[in-house]
Length: 121
Image: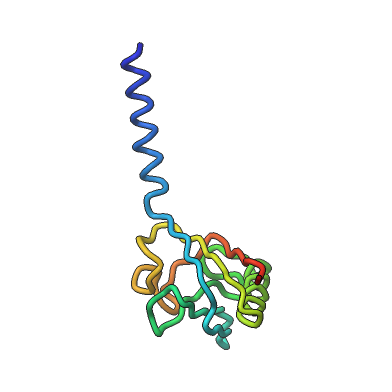
């Protein structure tokens, strides 16, 4: 019985590490942002090590499972973070780093799970 318990615990540890192995929390500042005429919200940040931007969502809700309402809220969040130089954090899954080469660029970027804004000090 003890061996079965050890096996179960080992399997849970292995399974848990696989689930969270590729989660990245990208923290920094918005350098610039834009909304394209087709409705995609793009950001460029100081953590992506790229001159290219990442697409976050589309204002009509047709990108990465982010609803139109959530995308509009993200746009306002990004706007305020850029305007007031507030630090933000984006959570990405299935990426190995916060570099643009890993997150993706322009319309090929991964969609973050959330955006968090930190109050300026």
